[in-house]
Structure formats: C-alpha cells, structure tokens
Length: 255
Length: 331
Image (cartoon, rainbow over all chains, first blue to last red):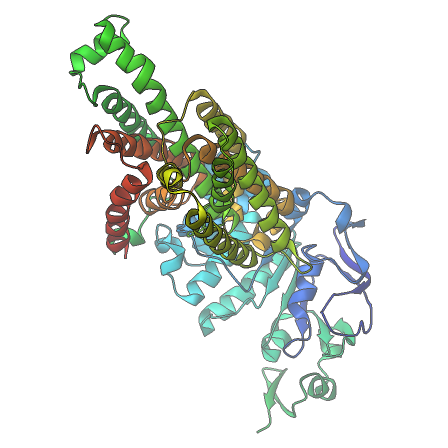
C-alpha cells in the first residue's frame, strides 16, 4: 500500500476560487504529469502533495495515512522533492550537496559513512556529474545545478519522486536522460509526479496526466485519454496542430 | 580551476580545530604575559605552575587571567551567535548586531547609566534590552503574513536603525561627565567584565546543545522548504536557533558592552577557508572568536598604556583588512 492519494484536496492558491477538489489515487509505477498554464498552481499542488504546504481543504494520504500524521523524517524517507528554486548562498561542493539526501537516514550524532558517500557518488555518476564532485555548486551552470538536485533525490532513494520541472535548464540530451531516469525509477516500483511545461515531453514520458486550469478546475486520467487537442487548446488558450511522429502525437502551437 | 572552486569533498579533518585551539592557547599566553609589567615566558610558566614572585602571581592570576578568559568567552559567544544567525536567515551577512539586538541592549544600558544605576544593574538592563529587542523583531517579522528570512532581516535592520537614533538622542541629552563611560560601553569594554565563568559556561553549554544539530543546520542552510523535504522540523528548529543566538548575544553584551563585527566576520572568514559544514564551523567559530577578542583586548590594554582603548575599535581595525583580503582572494 505505497500509494499517494488526494482526498477532496483543494490547494491553497491565494486569491483563487477553490474549484474542483482533487480525488485521485496515484500508484507505484505510474508517471504522473501535471500540466497547466502559468499560475495554475502546479508547484503549489506539488508542495501540497509533499506535505510542505497546508491545503485549503482535504487531505493527502501516503500509504493510507494522512500526511499530517506522519513524522517529517519518515516522510522524507519515502518522498523526495526536486525544487525549482535553490539556495546556494553558502559554499558547498557537489558531493556535499548530493550527500544531504542521506539526512533522513542518519541519527543526529552519526556522520556520513562510506556507504553514504558511495551512494552519493553513484547518484552523481548516474547524472554524469562525477567529474564535478569537488566543485562548488555556485560555480556550476543552471543545467548542472538541476542535475545536482536530481542526484540529491537519487541519493535520498525515495519511493515517491515529486519533481518540479525536471527538464528545467537541461540540454536535449540531458532532458532525455532525465526522463529516462524517472521512467527507470517508475519501473523499479517508484511513483513519479512531475510538473511539466512541455506538452510533448508529457505526451512521450507520462503514463497519467492531470490538467490544472487557471480557475481551479481540473481533470485527470490515463495519458492517452487526456491528450485530446480540444482539451489542451482550452488548457493553454492556444490553438494547436497535431502531427504524428513514431506513432505518437506531437503538439505544435499555431502561429 | 582556482582554489575557491575546489573544496575537499567532506571536511572530516580535525586539524583546523587543533590549529585554532593552539592559537587560542597562544593568545591566552600573550594576554597573561603582556601589560604594564611584561613577563618572560619562563616567569609566566612559573606562575602558572604555582610558583613565581608574588607580584607576578597577583598580576597574572587576579588581574589578567579573569579578563583574558572573559575576553575569550565573550568573543566565542559573539562568533557562535553570528554563525547561528547566518544559518537561520540563510544570509552570510546576518549577525545579532545587524538585527538590532545590541541596539536594544545599548539603549537599555544607557538609560540605566543615566538613572545612576551601578555596574550590576546596567548589565541586567542590557540583558533585558537585548531580549526585548529579540521579541520585538521576531514578533514584528511574524506579522500577519508568512515568516520569511528576508522579512526578518529587514525588520532587524530597521529596528537597529531605530535603536541607533535613540542612542544618539540619549548621548545628546546626557550630562557631559557621563559621556566617556557611555561611549566606552557602546564600543565595548572588558575592564568591568568580572567573573569569566558565566560566559565560558554559556559558550561550552551552547556548543553541547548545538553539537547534535550540526548536520541538520547544514540542511537548513539550503532553504526551509528543502530542509522540510529532507525531514527537518523547520519551525521548532528556527525558534531554537533564534532563542539560542539571542541568549548568547545578550550574555556577551552584558559582559562586555557592545562589540560589533566579531559575529559577522569570524564565521564568514572561516567559511571562506573551511567550507560550510556547521559541525566544523560552529566549534571553529567559538575558538576563533575567542582568540580574536583575546588578542584585541590585549592590544587595547597595551597599545597606548596606561590608557586603554575600547576593544571594539581594535576588533574592527584588525578584522576589516583581514576580512577584505580573504574576500578579495576568494573570487
């Protein structure tokens, strides 16, 4: 029972009507994409699912128990979050940054041991960052920092990945590599929820989609049922043309 | 790749602490040996070993040792408080003084002096003023909206400006004969420090309290949301940090008046050299802050003896060039 569920969930976006409460069950192995225009509340929803924001109504359940009744540390062992914003005011190396993913597993007096460091190095290798491990994070490019954040959650090894814009700042190769990493995690039994701007990435890599409209309305379901051009045009208030590439739809905005 | 871009993966090394501890001992030795009557290393060792001339014994054990230890303890508290505040506000420029704590303490202490109260009551007033300022800043920063580090920093900075206006007002209306005492208090003065055991005890205790929180503070330095996502109970931790840092500052201000700069500079200098692992930075701040203030106080006593200088002037004169040098070299 490692599902992540929303029960009558209304996220708290200031100054917006409550809209339709979310009642959905996300199961391990599924890759959920959250789509919506700017300001629709994608990030707020992700933070609410992670228990980092209090919802206006309803509850999030992890493994059948309300998130608010979990200890934060226990949640952190099951649920990893990749944020859009990062704080690099203080100097920290790439390896140190990946290592904070082990925090939920260590007791206060415990130092990071050999196995923790090995896990962090493995995660860095997975994201092609091993040659940067001694560099200061603040000296990296935006895409490299994004991969360090992914490596931190990979080190954390949660069963749920909540990712805000996984492909932010990434070049094409690393976009594909990142989506493949999330797909691989899902195959190994993790659940993945990601906020996405790119409709076509969602169409290619997500098994389920949740469409968030600016007025708080929402609809969700299996990806193939949700990728209806009319619904997507209404979502983004933008006319779309659909072309077929390798048997999958590709959506192109009309000029 | 320059020096600043690389950093050893995990600073497990304890050698910086060993070096800093040696520097602390050395600074204590200097503080005990130097003064109106300077002692040779042999004479100093003889006194510390329980022998030596009786004049030397009085000089070292009754006069210089309490003051040197008080200087060390006060510097340690200030540096530790600065390091904690910087993590709390995720801002390397935060410091209890920037946040108006010393301002509150100063106004309260000056009022006590104006009322003609004695040393112990002035100290008590300073302690109360620092805590009152803490509560005002924290309460106002809470406000009706959300609590953010930026909001808190701004509240503190504006409060500090308000306190500083009140200080100028009090100085302007005070009788002339009271001004020197007030100015010395405002610039920091260890000559009335009294027993050093309070500051030393509080410094040691706070290090013990903070020791198990080191890794958690490292995570908090990455931002509140990130820390919560990694299992940190952020709000209780932030309260703890703020209260501990405020108490440390209040005790330091009560002992030695208002000494700026140590809390801001010492942790920052150490971070430039050692990275930002709080398990290393917190004890290192304690040792380096204590050493800096001991040396500064020794200079303040001896530079233009028999006259004494305010120690805050010396910390700034020593600290500013070394800080600027480190900052210049780091990028």
